[in-house]
Length: 154
Length: 270
Image 1 (cartoon, each protein chain N blue to C red):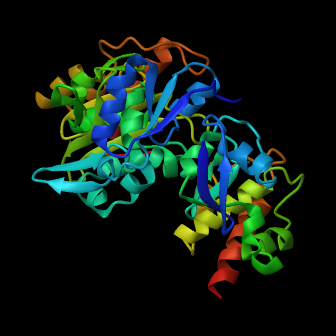
Image 2 (cartoon, rainbow over the protein chains, first blue to last red):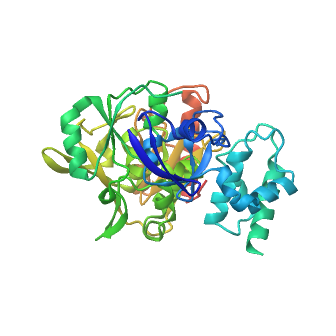
């Protein structure tokens, strides 16, 4: 069936099978491969994208459910080629190791800061509860999110 | 994992959803946030031939006060329940329970009606609705009916909803005071309860202590008869028959039920 939606600010219209998962639509039909398929069971958060500004797991959503909505992936965060403050902070604070969880972490963090611009460290840790880093690099990830919160409010 | 093929129908209203249910019968499944249904479809535990999407039906979402109750539309997501000033002030136990479901991403999509209709005995909201003495508003071809949470859960992942019926809203009595407790024992972040306890106003509900969320009636009766919290909590596992799994055997779950009930009756949140 035909769906119309907005992906990273661009209106799109695509033919999709109803059973197509949003993450596969983004990766295979839109060519946006930042969102990763990790666990495929709504646990790891590697596929996190923003749906109308709220973080969601795109492995547990059908592309047809996104019809009429706005999706933002990590590719869409860097407006005009300039890194988003969360992306900059992940680089500065070394908030990644192997990098697999990073797009999901960045999107979850961007969603968290949109809802709570000044989180405490505990709120960052709870806010990223839905994202796993199997390198266990959580300390620098939390540091990066706190640093991004500081730079976004500065 | 990709679900098996199905026909997709987007409902435009509650009435339209009921028409679609009537037309497709037991072959159809309702989809709202999809956070219980889609994982089951990916695992082929559910293979509906028709999926009726009620996620865009505006009349099914939202939170309002109605006399002594709050009425929460079935497709209201957990994040909206948890953040609602009305729910937080009038029924704080429910706001707290909604905030314990999964993780932030899950709470942005998962819905209160979906969680209740899914009827996982280890889940937060079924236990919360039983503790609060809430009820379900259901529409079907024969009209509307209201079912108390105590009677709604019929078995393991089973409710009294018929295949042609739609859960439209949840009704919860206001319980604004501080005399409530909530305990969820987990080993991992964003997991289901190994055992959970919600207590409010003399009612005690247990999660994962049987095929449905159950009341700790012996403990409730002891409390009503003037027993101490410690003595009442010691009776919390009476009459329960919890399943055994990798996390806990029967005796351990019953032990947890007693300990967590005491904490919940002391109005601890955890």
